[in-house]
Image 1 (cartoon, helix red, strand yellow):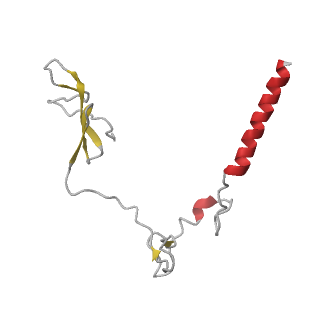
Image 2 (cartoon, helix red, strand yellow):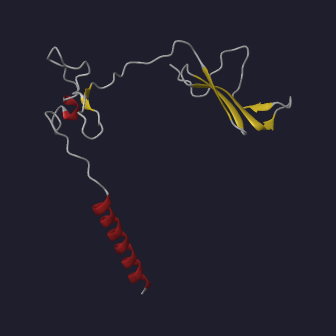
Image 3 (cartoon, one colour):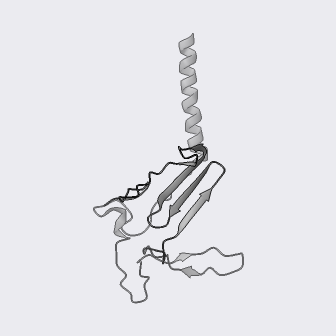
Length: 146
């Protein structure tokens, strides 16, 4: 009797999962345009093409429409460039809470200091989690090495 109930529970569970997928999960739209379908070049064929007209966008992608309020025209805005963005000078961002104090730098998003306020070291100061080597260049947390 218990095996029948177990099999019934499994079948009903699969039925619920199937109906949930059928009703609530939306399918992704089909890609449109040349090179979007399966083939030797795949879906990236359309994005690697260079613009042929002199007035084309530098990225090669068509302009995207920006949603506006009702009754207004939609304007075509070129996509933003993926060029590297850098700051003029190195800045440090300090995040302080009642539990910790963290110092981040915008030079590689490196964590320079992380002090725990509820834990003390030998000098009765906040415990420093990031090792600080005065004499040598230390590898800081979240730093990328070449």
